[in-house]
Length: 277
Image (cartoon, rainbow, N blue to C red):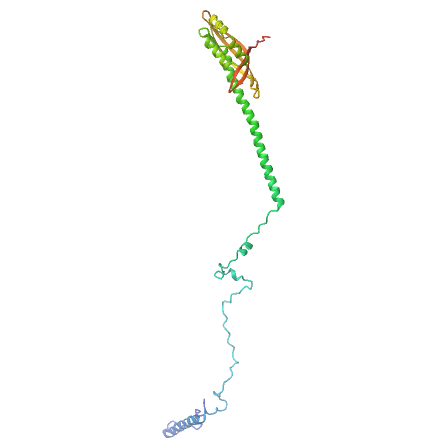
């Protein structure tokens, strides 16, 4: 509070209006004088103990210092080794170097010359072994198959030839002789052909019909290179005379077969005696 505002030291009688008016008038005059003096010469000097507002006062550090507000979210740490090329949007896809792409891929080592040579030799050896095995198998199984087929054919042709030369009809001797010539070859064929007239006469005079049946037969020898084979057969020959009883005779024949073209023909035939001992 200023000095002018201090209450007067003299006691004021509240019931005396004249005196009270002089006090208020004196205070107003004093205030007006002070204001006029300030206008003319500047603000009045502060009283003792008052604060001069015209001068900049130092801050009052007697009270507690205000605490600064600390942000609750720390700044993101930046890695010094962060590769800026890995950030999306910063990568320049148009300036990609193909050499860098090749370097980034797996490194493939080229096989050495020795490895390539060894691999080639191994493959060649495998191919040779496979081809040799196939050829051996075909040769072995091909020969066995040919032998099997030939034995079957010899058996069939031998049975037919043995039955044919043991079958005749006295009423048709020429037909019987023609059939014999058809299934024979070599010396036997020549013998039948040279004795044609004799054979026809003998068959006509025998007055007998004969018919043969092969009970069993087996190929005992076969030579594909020479085209020869041997067959043994057990044969029943049934004889029916013009007059008289029918009889059956069992014989064992050994036949020699020769390959003529695609057929096996009878080259020789003989009766094998049966030993009863």
